Image (cartoon, rainbow, N blue to C red; front, side):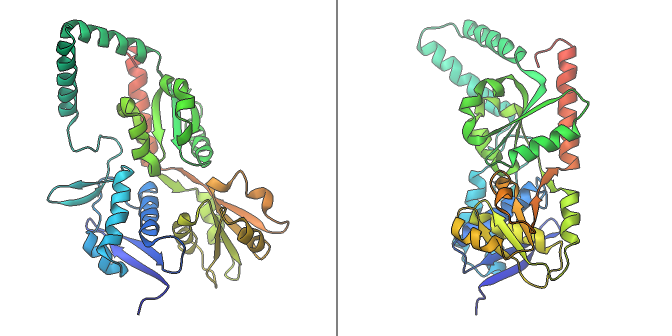
Amino acid sequence: MLVARQTVLVQLPGGGAVELSLDRESEVALHVQLFEQIKHFIGTNRLPQGHELPSVRTLARHLGVSTVTVGRAIEALRDRGLVETVAGKGVYVVDFARASDGRTGEERLQDFAALVVSQALTVGLDPALVAAAINGLIRSGRRRRDPRRIVVIDEFDSVDVEVDSLRRSLAGEGIDVAGIKLGEIEANAELIDRAGTIIAAPHCYGLVRQRLEHRIGDIVGLTLNLDPEVAADLRALPPDTRVLLVATVPAFIGWMSYAVSSLSLLDQTPEAVSMTNRRALAGSLSGADVVVYGSGCRRDLPGLIPDGVRGVELRHVVDGDSLESLRSRLKALLLAEEDGEPA
C-alpha cells in the first residue's frame, strides 16, 4: 500500500546518496516534485557536476512510481540544460563549464564556419572578405566587454541574494556585479553585452544558454550552499517549534522541507504553503512560531509576518569551489586585457 508521503534514500552510482520525497496528496504532479528536488540538489552541489544519476528504472523502483513519471522529470532536467544523456553510459549532471550538446568546440566551430562560407558563396561574396568583416566585428564587440563586469541571471528575486553573496566574496577585487531576471534579458541587452562574464543561477543555466547562445563561452553556472548563519538558525530551533514553510510556488515545498528537516529536530512536520495561495497563507502565518521562506519571497513576505513570529530566509551563498573557478576565469580575462588581447 502506498503512503501519501514517501521519503527514500537513493544511492548514487558514483557514491553517496540523496533523499527524495514524494507527496501523493500534493497538488503538484509527482514528476514536477521529482524534477524540482533533483534540480535543487544539482544547484546546491549535492549532485556534483559530472556525477551520474541512477537509471530511470532504478529511481522508479525506489520511489514506487512509473518509469514514465521519472522519465518526464529527467526530460525536464535535460530541457533546462542540467543533465545530459551519454550514449551507452547513462544520465549525467552537466559540467557547467562546457557546452553540453555532445560536440567538441572545434566541431561546432567547423560546422558554423562551413555554413558561413556556403551562405557567402550563395550570394556572391568572397568568403575571405566576409571573414575579415567578421573578425573586425568580433574585435570591436569584445573590446566593449569589461572583464571586471559580471551579470547574474536568475528567474526569481533570489537573484538579489546571489548578487549580494558575490559582492561580499569579491569585495576589494574591483569587480562590479549586477543582477537581472531571466525575463528581463532583452531589456538589459546593453548591460549584458558589456559584461565579461555572465553567471546563470544553476536552476536556469540551460535557459540562459538558449537565450544567449551567442555568448555561450562567457556563461558560467555556479553552485550554491545554504548560508552558514541560516543553517545554524535551523539547527537551534527547539523541537516544539511550530514551523511554517512558505515557498514561491508549490513545487518548491519539497526541497524546502528537506532543507529544514535535515538540519532541525522538530516534533512535528512543518506546515507548508505557497505565496500563490494568499488565503491559506494569511491563515497559516498567525499559527506559526517561525516562518521559513525561500529567497524568492523576500520582497513580499516579511511585511506579512505577524509581530512575535520570527522569519528565517533560506538564503544561499556561492560555494567555495565555484567561487575559486570564477576567480580563475576573472584572472585570465584581466591578464588578457593587460596583454592587449580582446577581453
